[in-house]
Image (cartoon, rainbow, N blue to C red):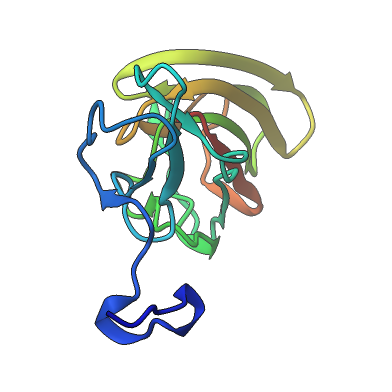
Length: 196
């Protein structure tokens, strides 16, 4: 039988020298390779079986997965003494499609991540404003601001550990002479870094 050099192998005979699958191959022998495809295309992980054949060691550092999402408000919104969910209706950055606009505006975590968000909301009247950040259905952060000038704004942020598909949104309540939101002051920016 003729010898074939590995560098000369082509076509269907050329393959990754190891297991290429999502399921754990198990105790297959020390030094064996496994290309773990669990997280799908673009997120495969190379692993090698440890010396005791009891587990897998990841080869190299994991790729840092992160994203940014930004939106502003281009249509004024009626505010109230009751909590109103803010519709940051104009999305300027959202490569992972995390933002759903409309009356049920929401950010949805694309994967387990450390979330950092900052928002500002303005209105054309003086008086107290309150802001709260809601994760899923629970209030996690609360801010309060009062001004006597003829316009008013409030700013606040949230840092939170989210699981995949957790949701985040911002709500505002006002006192004093209620008015609509001011689009020039109403915007949100969010960053998220994968933890998995």
